[in-house]
Image 1 (spheres, one colour):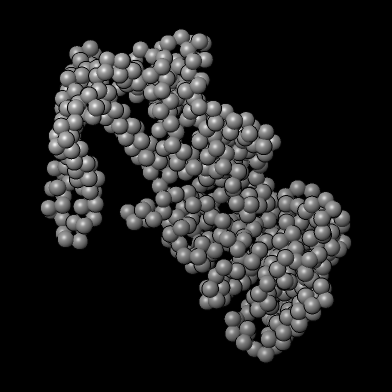
Image 2 (cartoon, each protein chain N blue to C red; image 1 turned 180 degrees about the vertical axis):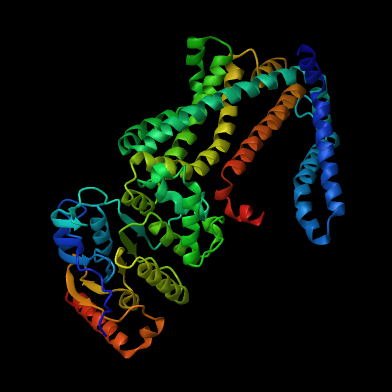
Length: 272
Length: 293
């Protein structure tokens, strides 16, 4: 049960040290004294009861919010602006209905440099890249369709593609599979697993979720948060070798980890 | 040019009748040629025609049965005769009403978009100007016409300005709403890519507010029409409103009704033109019907 030799280099990529944050001055803290360290290339999951400040954590590590206390360091630099190397996907696919799926994918390229200035002259190259990405998540030929002509699962796949098209170093996922049925969700677990594997070592993923099985199946490292104000109450590594098959979710070792995490969160809830 | 205008003024009612008859014939032809399943669908297209003609028939019969004087309520046949008799005047004044309405409407669109963008993009201006706008909008515009007459005299300008003032409000509100209600998550996705406020506006805000904008045009064109007719009634030498003011001074009731019919036809035409534009520009927002085609 040890990680293979192609293990990721252990350079911290996202580091939150003693981070506290509140949205309204004088209001209750959303997160309190967070300490999180995610290494480069790692797949981290943050689990916790709803309203525990998981989304705040996402906003802090992408520079959409700045902490009132403590430090957020991403890729060796303290975060002062939106980080620009991040891709994001949410529970709602947030695709733009007036753009086709392909045009939705191209959106980050119209904003992020160096793609923005290259886009017009190298259009064909980028379209080919976007179509290849769509194909890799099982959406061959869906590029010309509008998002509302796709099913919920397909929209979410397209949303993942949009988060990855500009080759971000950091992928933030905020309960991306929360609104999907159980079968589609498992399919998408495998999609995201394969996307992460293909960019071995260069893509750091932080997945916020309240689905413990999802976290254990996908992540190398899991952080458990307490209810509001959010604190890290446990951190554990998941050492299952990669690539992981969906079958491992039915093994007793897997259930043990899920059970353990569940116990810790339940404990945090009862003492809150 | 003069000959063409003359021809249009004298023969527009015939052109209208020929157009309507041709449309009915076309629909009937399609109904006869269609399969039984499509026939129910097509008969829905004919329904407005049947109901309209039916209403006018009932009106005609009631007037004849109770021998209502044309001075009180002219029968549709009397109105038709009046339309034919005064077709040159009605055509002339309708043309003026149409262009004055469209001019005011055009100003309202330009001004409404500009102010809507400003209010939608800045919370300060939204909070600051909104009460002022509501206050201005609640003034009955007929009360402003005398001021316009003092400023500009009797003519086309008061009508255009009244049409403008009465119709820009819904455009402002809708454009601002479309911009101000961007989903926070979409905004986060773009901000995390390093998008500027201007980029968020052009990539998401403006396309997103287009359905709101085109929706508001339907309301605005109707209001602009009301505005220009009100001003014509009080402060113009041209326009259907002015024609009606003079007809009522002459107690020419059939002409009054003929002018009302002309107003209705013109209003429907302008409304339908905006609906057509809306469907063309923002088909993606009308998903069910769009997906079906």
